[in-house]
Length: 93
Image (cartoon, rainbow, N blue to C red; front, side):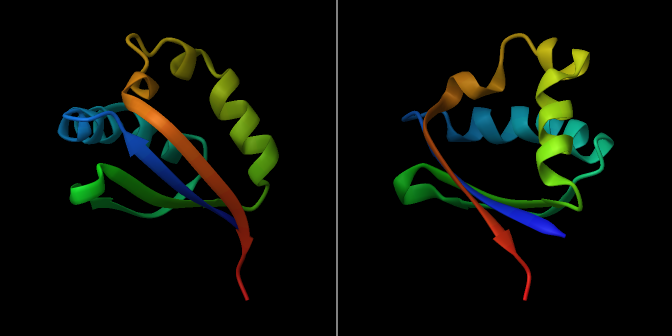
């Protein structure tokens, strides 16, 4: 399994709205594409959202997720709440 650590800085004042949209749209869609979601966390003082997702064929599944009609149909796009994103692929030991 390949995991990815994602750290987002959410726009000021939009953290709760981001979390609501992530739970309603992003999370179920990721799971529908076969991703394991290890968990989400927030660092409220810094308006940060952290999560870890995993998949056996991460690159192909990630491409399929972003190219899917369901992901493209998200309007407005939940990513509008994100000011900065960082991600690192990780292998379990």
